[in-house]
Image (cartoon, one colour):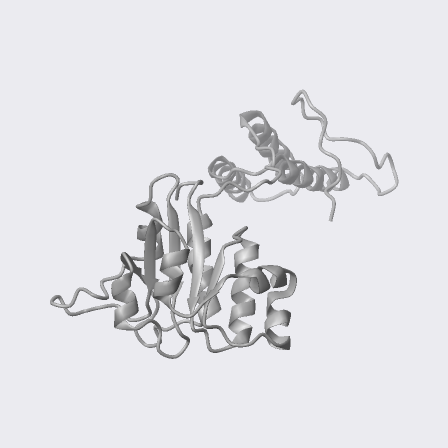
Length: 262
């Protein structure tokens, strides 16, 4: 989905105040500040509790009497009707929906899209669907296809945000030198276990193959290296308390990371 896509969530005559609050919270979770309400119920304790820190978004959402009135006042390039009832009749084109993935992958940069969600019991009317440019649905089970209103909104918001980059500390990856040192340490550990020759050879071979397929982080590498190092020292006769801070001998040109914070 383009990063510059602007979304508006439109709720048509939601019956339950709690759902309005939950939708407001989901909008805030995904950084969306455009919520439109059409003939909503009065807001009480449940709405405020569900909205939590998104109460301002809920209270400041513009309200209209009908979808037609909302369309006259809210400017959007594309209006998308959502439905839990997918059409299976090839002669009826009113409810031929796209999935959220198909929908968002089709939009170009800078598009403003209004997602229209219907009533909890009856959804959108045929007339309301015909007012919209496109139709979309979440591919749920045929046995129970209709989702809770706030859950459906959240699925669409997640799909819209799926390609978004998130700020995070990416763990440092290991390289060939790390993996070779890891295998060398394991081999030394196995050498002191006095295993039968065939078992020793197989253990070393399988461990090398497993490490070659994996991509452990440097945190994982140094932690496991420390375990094998201490195990090898114990097998050599080392006793806890004797030179506890002896580091394993691995020439990687860098210091091991500090302890991982919980």
